Amino acid sequence: MTAVLSKVDRGRAEEARPRSPRRYRLSKLDSKVSPYLFVAPFFVLFGAIGLFPLLYTAYVSLFDWELGDDNPAFVGLKNYGTLFSDGQFWNALINTVSIFVLSSGPQIVLAVLLAALLNANLRARTAWRMGVLLPYVASLVALAVIFGNLFGTQYGLVNAVLTTFGLSPIDWQADTFGSHVAIASMVNWRWTGYNALIVLAAMQAIPREVDEAARVDGAGPVRRFVSITLPMLKPTLIFVIVTSTIGGLQIFTEPKMFEPAGGSGGGSQHQYQTVVLYLYQTAFQGLDLGYASAIAWVLFLVVISVAGLNFWLTRRAVR
Image (cartoon, rainbow, N blue to C red; front, side, top):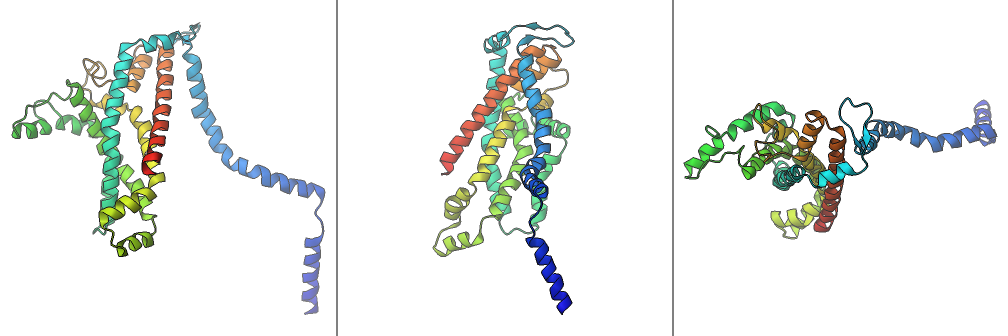
């Protein structure tokens, strides 16, 4: 017993002994530097593959730079001046905004309603939740083939349904609004289930006691959903709306795949040409890297502005 007590006393004496100044400085330095070392990999990768290309694109936009040109001519803001007077760019921007409005709005509403259904007491809930994610993981090429047949002019299922009800068939690829509806349908089909699972996860984090208390007070399902569920989903709804805004304004794959083989890019009259599709054609078909970089920077500013506006409007609406 005495030996055990002596060991305890020696341990306490060692703990009470002041540490050397060098060890103290190292310990203090470790506590200050360690958090920055943990987050450093993200900032290194972001700087290498995010920030540097962004700044370099701004640099390239100040030159008349064609692919393979070793001595590009400095033109300052001339590319931006040409861009703002370019009718094809404004047409592409209008098409982008139109497809974005037709896709993002219904997409968010459907995602919230679908999440509410998946949050109910359903049989085989796991299977249903996996099922709504299948369009997201499906191949975009297969998705384009399916929707190309659905919206086909002569033998498409959608036109067949329209003629059944006595309506005239629509040339979905030649008609401007019709092509926007078809492309927006592809976007909604792919992304609604993905957003619904994000909203569902937020719904399941809401305390059950709050919903049960409202039910005891006599609130119906609709009243509980509007007054309790939606306000508590505010952070998730803001995230989903902002991310869908960023993705919707950068849409490229769907209009590219919707176009038939041998097309000129965005339709015969550029009726569904988006800004990113115009950027791609300018850079890799027209080989004008300076002008394409100016398009990229203007699109970046548009995306940031619209995303910030959506963030502000969503916070006010939910509040």
